[in-house]
Image 1 (cartoon, rainbow, N blue to C red):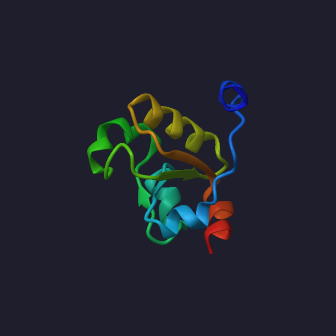
Image 2 (cartoon, rainbow, N blue to C red):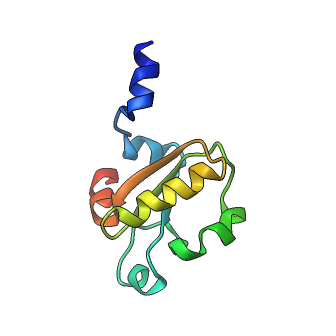
Length: 105
């Protein structure tokens, strides 16, 4: 019952982003191509938020771990919502790419 209540309230344990990456998570940076060119996490995939729905076929599988990131966390939160609504079940909002990069190093 407690777990159901936590889920309903959106209380979930914080993701261990470094562990997710070690286990093969895909990092999707949803900033524009220009923003991405100015700096990004090594190994991340750039799919701008406005192109995400058209590029779902580039993702490994709906149960594979995906971490979204952007400049501040707003677009990555939107990307997580889009992916979740399309049936992806293991999606994590990594927030800003710079903050996420520090967490996975």
